[in-house]
Length: 144
Image 1 (cartoon, rainbow, N blue to C red):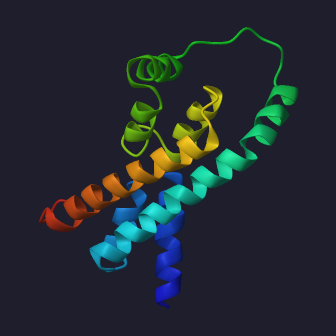
Image 2: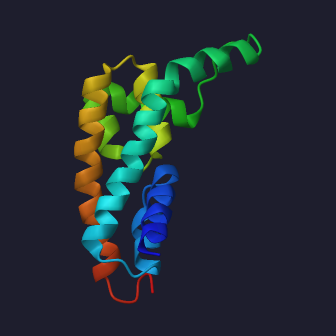
């Protein structure tokens, strides 16, 4: 039954990073187990988008109507982060502001090399998984 809890935390963090620590707390896993599953979940989505991203991009371009590119608030924010701090900034802010899928997709649009993208996302995932899991587990009454 413990395996199902791990899978649930991993799946929660593939979609939204904070979902991992919250699910781990709900399933009463240790904070180390929760942090590890959260990292695995983020990296699973990063690897999936990185290696399937080219195919998905070509498919979406084929299906999308030929329109001029739109600059939304979110795309402006991504360009601003990219200009200020590059891939390091995108990786650092992915668990906080972006989803693992969204951060990886943004990095892919800026043509970041796969090894650099994966390694920086891994460092960011480990850093933020430890901090967010610790905060979720240690702040009394905040999430209980």
